[in-house]
Image 1 (tube, one colour):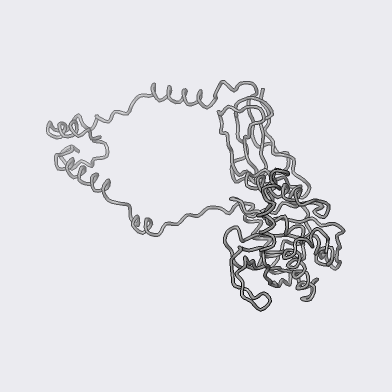
Image 2 (tube, one colour):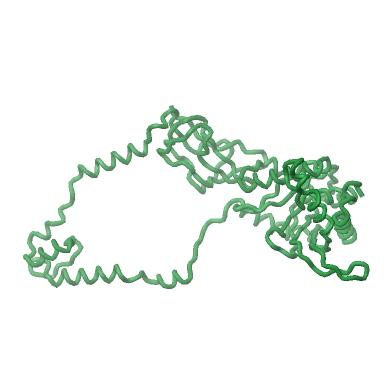
Length: 399
């Protein structure tokens, strides 16, 4: 029985998608719940699963074509996974080839002289492409020699421009749907917001000591490592409560104040940057936040994030330090008002109480929309995060 292969049901926020990959081709056997194809949307890559065992019999939508929600993209024959239609077709083609009469390439050779026939036979040369110059349209020995020389030259000579191509290779590929969407959003943010960035630096020594002292016990108790990001999420939540305007967003001519803190954590993947959201981060403990970060990071890198897990968000944290970035200016994640950028930790000499100490320092960068945030609010917000990170006990006391 023929069964339709349909694209998944898209959420309301997703209008359409693009066939990214057909993991099965016509004639391939599929098992129930096996991934047949992947559909890339503006936000995530969705998998198309087989409803039952069978064999793919028809592909209606090819790779690169646009599809809408629940659209038929192919068909498969149910319950015939042990039979490959493609193999049957290939066998039929081979049989047809075998019974087709072979072209007589020796018709021209019949009227050639003995010397020519001998060379053609010894060198296994097809006389058809040789241009005859002899009497009665016969091939001469010179014709064969010239043909051999020309053929040898063509085989040994590189194509025209090959040297240039090998030295200066180029490859043109279409931009992925996700990459294209990211590009449009970033350009839109630059054009439609009054984005500025303020900087500060934080002494990471207290948090490093805390991790060194309790890290192993924390992991044993909660089954997850004690990282840096969890501290930054909690510090951001506390600062957002103090400065609710940073947690707000602009909608037309209105300012929307959010009574919750949903923190987006930027994750880099092979397909591009995605931002899963820790919902209601203000109600979660440090272990719960660390578990959420680990879970979302694994899902993001494996392409398993759902659209719901990336929707919303009132504030975003991006960590360029994992790639070695010392300082950067993160771009806003619209329609949010601000984004915090973390960077690599480096030991630097700093003055503490009139003395020089070597401390693990990190630069912080916060980009914000100047249409809603003034410089004073942005700077004091970032200082609040810095103070909490340099005194982790403030995080526990909600100071």
